Length: 61
Image 1 (cartoon, rainbow, N blue to C red):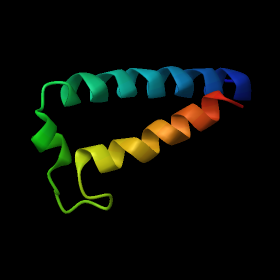
Image 2 (image 1 turned 60 degrees about the vertical axis):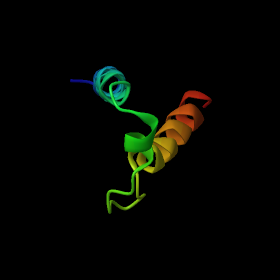
Image 3 (image 1 turned 30 degrees about the horizontal axis):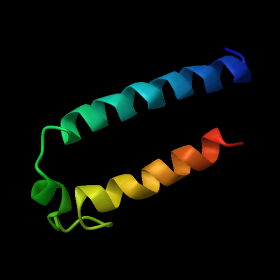
């Protein structure tokens, strides 16, 4: 597999996983999304925000 093909495959995988993440999160209430779960970023929202920003940053390159 070429490096370019590998990057394309990983981008497709990332897109699929992001879609699944947002579908699952859409089933939760606002309070469930903001509840501190003891994770590194605290809540699910706190975890998703850096992921969103990095994805947006990467897409802008």
